[in-house]
Structures are given as structure tokens and as C-alpha cells.
Amino acid sequence: MALSNNLPMAYPKTLGSELVTLRNVGKTYGRGNKQTEALHGINLTIKEGEFVALLGPSGCGKSTLLRIITGLNNATTGDVLYRGKALTGVNPHATIVFQAFALYPWLTVQENVEAALEPLGVARLERTKRALRLLDRVGLDGFESAYPRELSGGMRQKVGFARAMAVEPELLCLDEPFSALDVLSAESLRGELMELWLGGAIPTKAVLMVSHNIEEAVFMADRLIVMDKGPGHIIADIPVNLPHPRYRKERPFLALVDQVYGLIVGKTSSESEELGTAPGETGATRALPVVSIDTVTGMLERVNEEPNDKIDIYRLATDLHLSDHAILPAVEAAELFGFATVDAGDLTLTPLGQAFADASIQGRKEIFAGRIRRVPIIRWIRSMLDAADQHRLDWDVFQTALALEFPAQEVTAQLDTAVNWGRYAELYSYDNDQSDLFIDADDVPLNVGK
Ligand code: ADP
Ligand code: MG
Image 1 (cartoon, protein in one colour):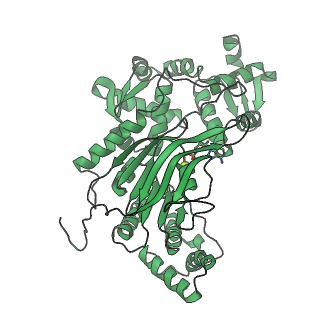
Image 2 (cartoon, helix red, strand yellow; image 1 turned 30 degrees about the vertical axis):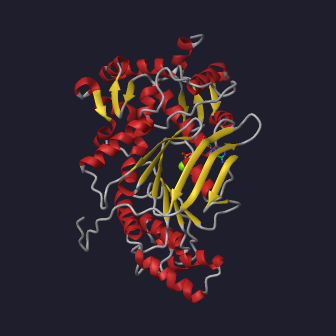
Image 3 (cartoon, helix red, strand yellow; image 1 turned 90 degrees about the horizontal axis):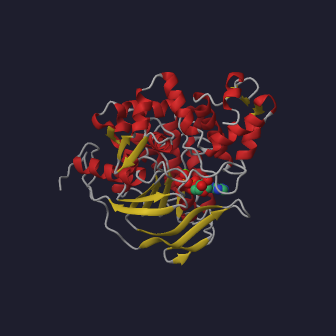
């Protein structure tokens, strides 16, 4: 094993005793007939020395799982143990870092970190000592007396890390900690976290990180837990036996990234999959993949350039400068429209997808309109507007109806997506001034009683 001062090579750490034990854990949100089963039959252990990444499509329960392990949420069924003891209430040995860390704007950087230590009863002098040491470690030396508003997003997130690590948690939980940062800040903060973790500079015994980014997970973690939704469950547990530092262009690195892509993307919906029901009908309304038509069209055009109309999804993301976060819903949408199929990490255009990619602008709109009429939310919006006075309804009407089906934070994205698709297909339009959805007079007779 090569060792040098500025390039430490390290294998994943040796494993110690079990910190987290989940046995047959399930979680259901809501009550009555508006229940969502977020997790089902989760069995998972995390040991000292492990850096575990949780991956999977949006809504598969990653954040929920993290909240259960840190004690912020209760499991509905099953056992949640920490160091072999049933967990009750908030886990005092775990800390969680969220995507956008909330700092106290009226406190300086140093005071923000110290504030986390006060409730633990750490003496004032020790608080200051620890805060200064950690700020130095995350590279914020010289910014101790700055206020959050004076810092960039990346620096604020570093304060968040320092604050999380100041309490010296045994288990450091990270929920997509880099996804709100620009590319460079994210990369430098990843590097700093890996140095702290591998170098043993923090007393943290294990790290559990939720990620949307497969490359990031393979870069950092020793073990990848891949989840799927409907309800959230674990579909794979993959060891990453690559020494650190890892290089993204290395063959074993790329091979592993490809394998995980295949697992995640291969699980998205196909043409024949249940489309779900429309709002107001019995049964679950399936969420639309949140993606604009421009992104989907750009992706299909790119695949259409390939011999055999087939491309490795991992390469597709790179070519289109899309993050994993952005490519997955685009792939899901292409499958939903019947424009592409996914197999083992490759995306292949269907004959319909080829026809779409080759068609004129108007031709594309017609093909697309035919496809999305089958999608329950779109069908529902169109039929509401068909029936409405002047074929016009306020945005809030749809917003309110969808709020019964989706968590509040998802409703607007669902409706934005439905409007983006419907407008492109010329099924309905949106009036910005009045925030109304409406059917263009030209389109009404054509579509009545379709
Ligand atoms: P992920 O982090 O993988 O995107 P989440 O854990 O946020 O997934 O959500 C899993 C499922 O549980 C989703 O269907 C989501 O809509 C639902 N959900 C999450 N939080 C709540 C909540 N507070 N109330 C109701 N449903 C929720
Ligand atoms: Mg989440």
C-alpha cells in the first residue's frame, strides 16, 4: 500500500461492534384512508468503522429511515436498537446534517458552533476550544467572528458540519449534505469530510449518508444500501472495497457506478406499469417524475444520435451535464411515455421514441399529447377544465385537490410539472396573470368527448 504525506492511501476501516440495528422496521405516515407506507420490512445493521451510503429514487424513504435512526421519528413497526438497546426518543449519540443547514443569523460562526454544545453542559472554556478547533479543521480558520450572511453557501454548510461534529456524535448522519452546494464547494467539503473521517480526527464511529448522487456515494462510502419505493425497502447491500483516495476515472470505480445505476434505474416504471388513479378516484395517485419536457427531449435527442439508439445512462448524465438527481426523473418520464426502455443501466429508445426524436416540432407535440392523455393527473386536469365554466379554473383548485394526495412540499412541483407537460402537448394552458389553467378556445371542440 503506497503511503505519502499528502496522499494517504487507506482502506475502509476495520469494523467494531454494532451501533444501529433495525429489525423488520416499517413506517406509515398519516391516518384513516390517507396513509402512506413509507418503509416496509427494513433490516439493517451499522457497525463501528462503517461509512454507509443510502441510495434510491426520490420518495423511497431515505430521509424517513435517517429520522428513525436518529430518533426524530418513531418506527410504526419493528425494532430500532442502538448499541443493542431499544431506542426511545431522540438518539443522543447521533447527529444529523441536513441539505441546508439552519444557522442562527444573529450569532457569529464561532457562537453558532458553541451554541450546539451549551445544552450538553460543556463548560464555557471547553466550548470555545472545541469550536475553534473544529472551525480550523473544516477550513474556516479566520472566519470565527463572521456572521452567516457574510458566508457563501459552501462555507455555511461547513459551519453546519463543524456544529454537528462539535457534539462529537458517535453516529454522524448526513441527509444529502452536498446537494445544495455548487460543484466546487461540494467537492472540497467532501474531501475535507473524508480527511477528518479517515484520519481519525473526529471521534465519530460511523457515518450514514443519504445521497442522490451515485458517484458521490461510491467515492466516499464503504457500503451502499440501495432502496426502492412502493413502499420503501432495501434491494441491495453492496460493499465498496476500493482504497482511498478513490479516482472517478478508474475502471473498478466506473464499473461499480454502472452496476448501481443498473439497480436503481432498472427499477423505474415501464410502459406496462400501473399508472395509478386520478385525484378523487379510489386508489393511489402516482406522482409525476418532476422533470421538464425540454430535459426529456434533450435526452431523447442525445440517445437518438447513438448507434442502435442505446446509451449507458451514466454516460448520458455526464454528456448532458446533468446530475444523477436530474437524470433519474428524465429517464422515468421517458419510460412513462413509452419512449424508452431501461435495462442493466442502458437506456434504449423504443420505435415510438425514435419517431418522436425524428419528428417536427408539431409532430412531436402530437405524439406527446397522445402519450400523456393516459397519465391520470393530466387526464384529470383536462377533464376538470373540459367541464368548467369558460374551460377555466384557478390554480388553487388543483393545488387543493392534490394536497389531499401528496405531502405539501411536493404539490407545487407536481402541478408545475403537469402544467409544463400539458402546455407542451397543447392540452391546456396557463395564464400567469390570473394564475388560471384554461383550455385554448381553438382546442375545445377538437377534444370534447375524445
Ligand atoms: P426520500 O428521502 O427517499 O425522498 P422520504 O423519506 O422523504 O423519501 O419519503 C418517503 C415517503 O413518505 C414518500 O412517499 C413521502 O411522500 C412520504 N412522507 C415523508 N414524510 C412525510 C410526512 N411527514 N407525512 C406524510 N408523508 C410523508
Ligand atoms: Mg429525502
